[in-house]
Length: 81
Image (cartoon, rainbow, N blue to C red; front, side, top):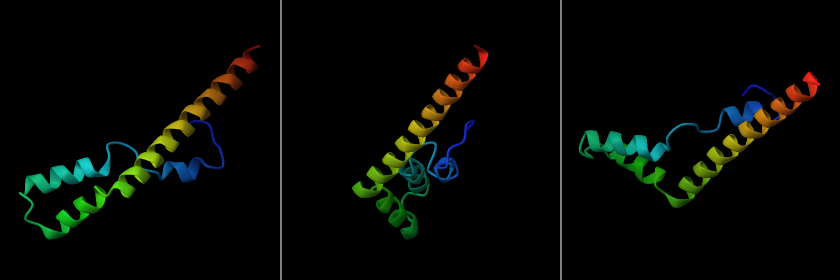
């Protein structure tokens, strides 16, 4: 994140990239679902509350990044005047 806000360090720790359940699904499929621990992680990652929370965190991170870029661009435009 180019511009900084008090929430920047915290938001940088939020999930980024593809949802966790997609990666876990590939892992479980690769070994045919034989590992019980992997299956439990996959089931937990598919829990509706977990999915909603992860989606909200990704959305917040994206919105914050867009807002900081907008503020940086606005400050840059005002500095050029």
